[in-house]
Image (cartoon, one colour):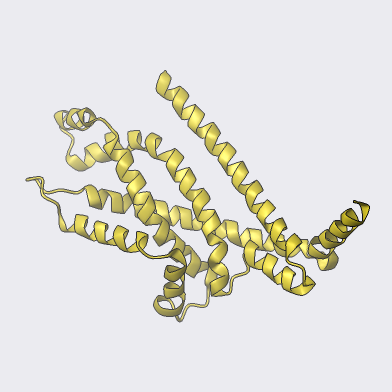
Length: 233
């Protein structure tokens, strides 16, 4: 047992202490959080616009061209792997761009937007139709009713699933090593190649991911409980 503990301690020292390798983990975590944060904001903006496009109808109730565009966007993004989208963005669409963080943010933001669009759409549809009718009876236009009455109520419905989408997005950023970015996962791989020991660097990265996601999950749970309390008032 003592020999095993000594071995583990040596592995830990090689993976985190020697050569200040812990700094590489911190740097990689910073890249991971930066990409996830800005991609989540971009995804929320795109998703909201796409959701409104998908819900748009003519006066006779028929779908508009915006609806078909939104459906095509959602189908294409959800029907292709995120790693493939990242590679297309890096090697084809933004081939001349050398800013890997920007490419990753755009790629993951566009990817997340397709999922957020469905979340926002579901949240809007969950609002009672009577709210829309009440807004129109007060003389508000369709757009004004959506902005001032429906969307504020829909926000309460979509916040928890959007929080879950951010957690998923955070984990998906582990593939940014494909575009030469040193995120947390790639930092662990680099240290593994230097120490010729994969166990401790990879387990260490996994623990860091777990802790970050656990914190986000707890915060999301607190938010959901507060939203439920406000519903019961």
